[in-house]
Image (spheres, rainbow, N blue to C red):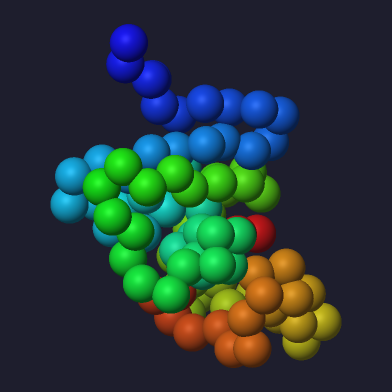
Length: 97
């Protein structure tokens, strides 16, 4: 019997890593960030084929642009940092809004 992936339970998904898949590719598939996958799974290195990962849905991810950052107040930027569990934001970074 073959186990189908992903398995969604509430806002958490159990996902089994495919052959040659990276955390970045998985994060794009689930519209999350590599940082959250790494934190949620306590990863120290890229997962191997067949490893089970927990993917927690937190909303849509997107890439930061200069234009987007210019529209945000200092408080909004601090809030984004807290939500994304990062110390700094930079252009090209993938975050959750």
